[in-house]
Image (cartoon, rainbow, N blue to C red; front, side, top):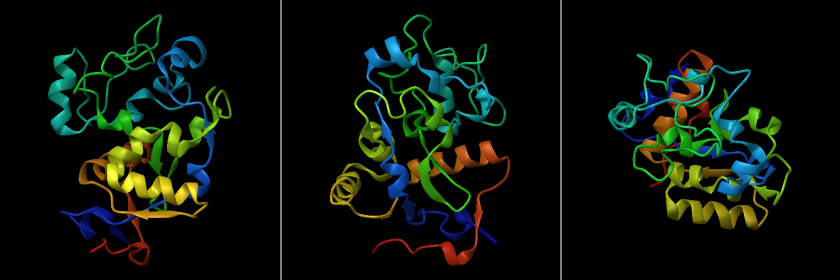
Length: 206
């Protein structure tokens, strides 16, 4: 077994994005919908400790703390009464959403890695109000921001065309930042390093 970050320490491996998962239907994250319908439930959890939900990268810690947030020694957001401390009471909107301090892990949600290293929509999102509700957009549209962070604008455009044409799983080359957030989220959730058989590794493009 080889740790993925050991295979390509300076360049992430190509990553598979599940077409089936990317085509799950959600409303999306419009402010009115968050305020009036879903109540920002993705920023709270009754089943997963909040400090397992939001991984904060070392370079993000300073800006988060400058806005009054707390980051644990393990590099995760410290929750406040079972919810993210930046979720506004009343509107349930994120105080950091329009700032440069919002952790990339928040933007990347709900995308995550499964144990095989495939990018999927986190299973917990299927239990939220937005699943199969409202506009019922495919996840690759409803949660575009996370895929742009993971792949960049140009590759996201390729993925969009691929999915709209009915394509299967998409193989992409993630950004270092996006890949780092995926791995941090997986390892925080699983409590162990992300490891895959070497045969699962796909060489980078180019």
